[in-house]
Image 1 (cartoon, rainbow over the protein chains, first blue to last red):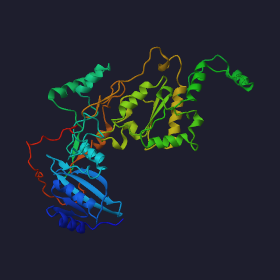
Image 2: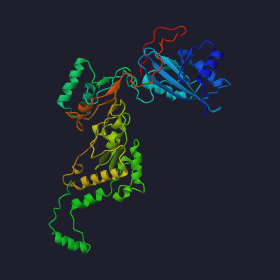
Image 3: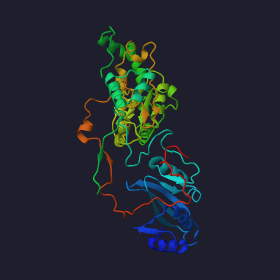
Length: 196
Length: 253
């Protein structure tokens, strides 16, 4: 497969769409305003020179300062690619326009990112959890996710066990009651790594 | 593990003489155990890569049929042995416990591989159960990642030894009114409820793993992460923005 020249792709998009702010990071293109994403993707999909008709992956990562989604586009028709697009959104308001209307295959991958990172893809037809169950709280792949301590029973566990006729040791019961009194959850210890 | 004691009054020398003539003198226990241990029917289910090794064990090269355990039953009602082959995720754990409950007595469990013993390499993950022995009793723990077919056969032989040591008068599965069923965990907001069943498993007082390695759930940036240019990210301007939207909550459409 031919590898696309990022600078050329950037110039072509800027020539065709004008107002789109792009920045090339190594061999990928950062779209600085998330709302421009559908425009850029539509151009790359429909322009005769590109015909990037296959969205290979939609992934996300948590960079603490922001959340990022990365798109890899290929062309089945011209056997070229990939063109890598990055979109960054603030953690407090992570909203990106959905690409499902352009690429049907984005549906499950956007749901996956919503499930694990909490990025909301606006315009997605069916945005709900795909891996974790309904009623799960939080987004486990975010760096600030608080993981439960699986060795310590909490009051919900004790209540459930007693409802099901299981004898709970007094020490575990006392610990759960203490946690409840303090209004705390039993959380796994975490070690903060230095920022490099 | 010792064999069930031979309580017959027949002299050993006489027994050997009779055996030469084709007459076998034995005890009820030994006969029962011989029959049971030579026809352990495993349940046909696999959860991850360990299942591939389990399949290899059942094929011609390793041939689990030599031990009478070749009939993998697709129904828990017909199975004696549950080989928990692979990673038990929190989403799968209730189903594994339910299958165990549905098996008929006597029933045995082999945990195959590091994941089903204690979570394996995924022990720090948010989605993997730290060992199926938190919810159901396990007879043989079989370490490896994954264990080779020889190891699975060894585990089966260990289970056979365990069966050989049982006596029908005292075996728990032969007592009246025994119902070995365990409550099926439910999905909670942060994981499974309960985290473990204290009748089956309890955390160790001294967790050596914690002592030696700490509990390293890493947060923060990795020092070797690629050096991507950091740009200021502002909230994207949206036409006619309504009232400030609340942060995303799970399950919203």
